[in-house]
Amino acid sequence: MSRISKDQVKHVAHLARLAVTDEEAELLTEQLDKIIGFAEELNELDTDNVEPTTHVLELKNILREDEVRNSVSVDEAMKNAPAQKDGQFKVPNILE
Amino acid sequence: MSILDKKISELHQLLHTKELSVTDIVDATFDRIHQVDDKVRAFLTLNEEYSRIKAKQLDEKLVSGADRGLLFGMPIGIKDNIVTKGIRTTCASRILESFEPIYDATVVERLTNADTITIGKLNMDEFAMGSSNENSGFHPTHNPWDLSCVPGGSSGASAAAVSAGEVLFSLGSDTGGSIRQPAAFCGVVGLKPTYGLVSRYGLVAFASSLDQIGPITTSVEDNAYLLQAIAGNDPMDSTSAKVDIPDYLASLTGEVKGLKIGVPKEYLGEGVQPDVKERVMEALKVLEGLGATWEEVSLPHSRYALATYYLLSSSEASANLSRFDGVRYGLRSDNSHNLIDMYKQSRSEGFGEEVKRRIMLGTFALSSGYYDAYYKKAQKVRTLIKEDFTKIFEKYDVIIGPTTPSASFKCGAMTKDPLTMYMNDILTIPVNLAGVPAISVPCGFSEGLPIGLQIIGKHFDESTIYKVAHAFEQATEHHKAKPKL
Image (cartoon, rainbow over all chains, first blue to last red; front, side, top):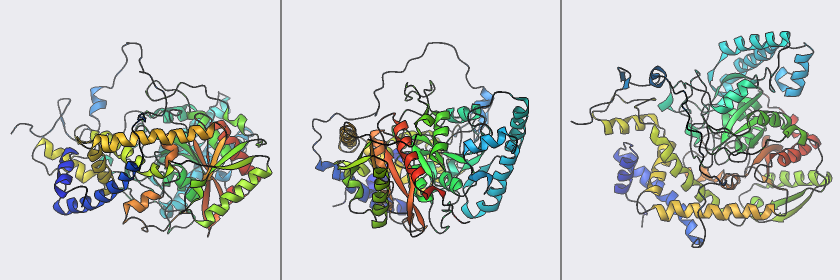
């Protein structure tokens, strides 16, 4: 039985904000199924009493003094914008 | 012998005695690039005009006797996922094809302060995802030792450019082996520093808990020079460690007497080519001859490292790459009619196949109902892998094994099957999961293609790694061989 269905792949693609064609979804279903199957070998290990490692070094919260610092100018922030108007990023309609 | 075959210390001596100018070094660099890069195809962007102006400025500094930086006048190539102010930075992705950063990464700033010259930006697997440099959104890079073979990935071009003598040294980034594997395939020296030693500020993130920037050079000495210039705490990176930086060059004594080496049986097991095993055993004999001792040890969870890595790195990648939405920078699709559609179309047109596959895997592993079974499980296995290393380092100074299971492979040989391609990183990945440092140094050849020896150290103990690597390099001739181009 496959571990992931084509419908699930399409749903995941939507969550990931990727447009996939039917053919791409088919191919991805096959490839992801194989990779997830491989990843399931981790189930051989008993990890009930193991703490997860999110970070390899012991880090505490990093705080800095609350001082005013320079930030980028509007011109710099807009430098790579694909579309802009009056110093703001321009996007297609959100409400139709 | 070309100018670029010399070490930093030798070039500095020639600059000091005025036998050479910085302009001479930069001229030689571009002459070589124009001579061979149409074959190797390492560079995505060249910074020629600025480099020549900068060389003149440094030559003036040389005459005036002003203070000189640690890497004065040395040309460098930078992997294209490290941002450079005013120089196009693409991550080898169509989605960032015309992106021009407005700031320098901390490593670039530190190199500039050390008086280096940024020659250009080097090709890579798109967003550092790949093991062969064939996943670039622009063009593949070729291995200087055999142009029909891959240079390794994802810092393949960073290693190829150094190996081909196009640039004196380069910066790469290593998430699962992306500095060490191409260094091994191209016969150069590549270091993945301890996680947190080098600032990641300005490195376009792939998997934030694993990525680390590191130097690729032709000698261990040059590697130590470069790390000296870039290592150290950075307030701009919240994952940067607050540790004292030792004098790395002082560790290059050639002395390894009494040093204890652990050799994991898993690193010389099934799947590792006989030629590779033989070269590693020869290397251990060399170190034994210098007074070190070695014993077989075990990293019992290393066989789970690959699955752990792909779950964790893809999950982090899916989060990191969500910033590419076509709103503030990068490619925006013309084929959309509303906002959600614009996100989807822009990302689908801009990202390549491998990147999309990993975003999909990561989004799946992090999605509701699967998080505990995949993502959290992998975090727990990472703990076991890290503990394996801690146990060995209680008794041994370094761990040694091969960098890769085989020498380089033919272009196109593995692109059809992602899983087989992923297997190629099996010996380097555990190191990233544990966050420890490791270096790859040349240790011989298999049918004319270079093989790398991997030396792994304790957290923040780059000095011992350099000590062993330098002693081995000085006792052998492997690093002296150059590809014929």
